Length: 131
Image 1: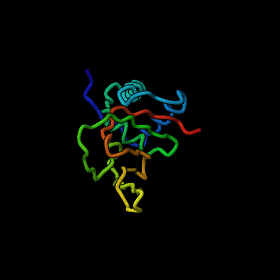
Image 2 (image 1 turned 90 degrees about the horizontal axis):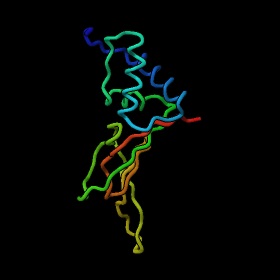
Image 3 (image 1 turned 135 degrees about the vertical axis):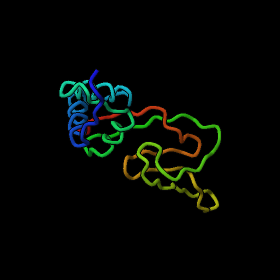
Image 4 (image 1 turned 180 degrees about the vertical axis):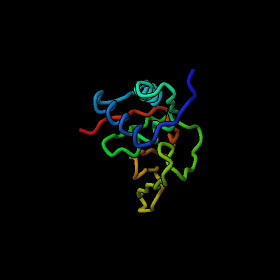
């Protein structure tokens, strides 16, 4: 078994871009890692990549939109950074019938992740090519 090597980020970005463009979408983060690693091994058998790194590289590609499916969290929890891309997250506010400003959820400007107060835990990521 050859020693593991870490491929350059721009090379991985090109591979991710090609895979998502040709397929149109990739259903899960695990599937993205599998497809990227399979393609990287054609160039060098030692190349390896984690699913987290593949996701972070995909976040920086403007042609790829990432959809995050969330699951309900039992407690309301305050978050400071986006659970999908780790960028700073913005609080969303609305007004009630008494015209008071109330906190209703969170949204990320970088990746588009948004959630209400009860579902802040991402469960599955889907990678979609913007056409």
